[in-house]
Length: 240
Image 1 (tube, rainbow, N blue to C red):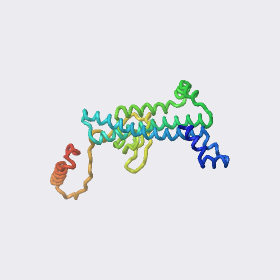
Image 2 (cartoon, rainbow, N blue to C red):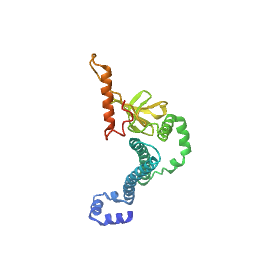
Image 3 (cartoon, one colour):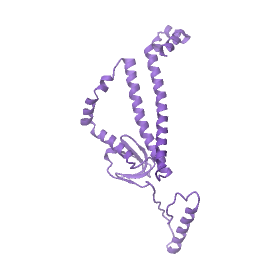
């Protein structure tokens, strides 16, 4: 295919113009091979993203049929796993394209680098222990379903909504809009306030002379009426 493309470009007006202006190297076999691989990698990347998302969606939905998972829990689980797997997939494609470009354009063979994975592992053991710890901790957090994207959590003093669970850090946005980046390896205690169900508390200011019993009855009656509405029946466990 690459040779046919090159022959076509060489015989076309564009190819003749490039050769006439000393730009023939732009349609050399090496450049065409590299561009073809990059285009193919982009296609594979997006196809892989779709297949990963579909696989995760299908797997979780199939599992949810046999468990009493709430719809929101299913959506959070899906979103978290999709983000993590897409990050892995993106890293793999980037490394692959970088290796191909280095080999095709600069004649630099990266295979000895990959072959020396044992040496790299030793270097990681001494020089990047915290990075490996963060990575493994992130894997266990996802596997144990400690929290998901969208959960309200309190992690090592950072309280807020989980925006992203990455391979190295967890991103949390608090009620004031501040973003906290918590390394996964430092997380030892997690308080998940929205796992399965949560409690809503409201502050109601009343006049000091009000009858507390009457106010309490009104609040309870309002909660019970709200729990009977069709839109809230499955969302409210106990209105009192």
